[in-house]
Amino acid sequence: MRSLLDLPPVGSEARFRDRIPRFLLTVDTEEEFDWDKPLTRDTHGTDHVGRLAKFQEFCERQKVVPVYLVDWPIANARLAAEILGEPLANGRAEIGVQLHPWVNPPFDEEVTQENSFAGNLPRELEATKFGKLRETIEKNFGVAPLIYRAGRYGAGPYTAEILAEHGLAMDSSVRPKFDYSAAGGPDYREHPIRPYWVDDEHTLLELPLTTTFWGMLRKQGAYIYPRLWRTPAVRGVLARLGLLERVPLTPEGVSVDEAIRGIDIALDEGVPLLNFSFHSPSLRPGNTPYVRNEQDLDDLYDWWRRIFAYLEQRGVKPSSVRDVMHSVER
Image (cartoon, rainbow, N blue to C red; front, side):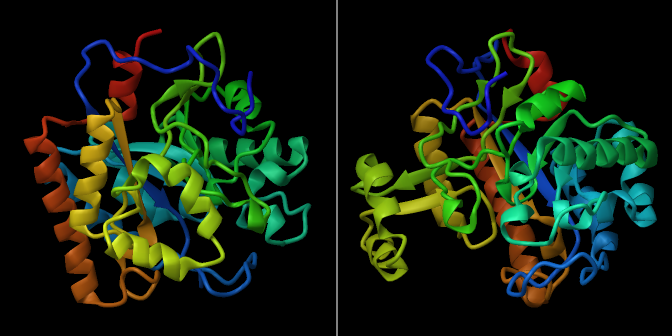
């Protein structure tokens, strides 16, 4: 089993039988905490959990199956299980694992920025935390999770092995074109945005989050963009001039027009699956920098409406973990 930190070798790209482009909606379903303050084990809340009901109803009207990647506080929130239990049982929603080690027992490590990336923990501790979380999700939600995303995208050298040992079929921790090494995390700048097999036996499938470069200099984006990390103002100038822009497929900090440009680039490059994401605390104003008031929340839902409509126009069909498992060639 290769590490999720390794670049996939030639020939590991996953292919789908029907060749129809797909999209996946993943939700980092996690506790609320102040993103501007140091992490702690206890200064967090789950007040937004009730908002999952409205979002689930919205997705059902749009005929989209959201994938809720649940961490420890949400896995133990009774209201979350009450809201999601019936949609999960009937295939209108799916559940996965998201490990935030600082709030997930056992608490055998110090709470530091480096330790917030689960892949930096000793293998045994990462595996124990993951195992407790996976078991709790299955017990409380009645469904065995098959997909994982490391909190803060913090996969490590042993993460893939741990997932395989617990029977997970997919990972979605890799965020191409992003580098978290300055904070002690992984560097995914060179990873592909196409799905690929982590192992030669084709038992663990990586579904990277979709990020593209757009602009006149996009072909040189992998070289130029990382060299501007100390000068974010220059990045902004390049984006405004239409020269170079990094576009992750998320409503958080990305406009509809920007996202559509990202979708077009990915489809033109033949990417078979687009992986969208956002954080569940954004469903309640005041929890994240992206949704500060009710108007921002209305804009968030409108973003999804317009994106879903554009994806339908481009012939991109909604997907799910179950759909991917049935459609990928092995």
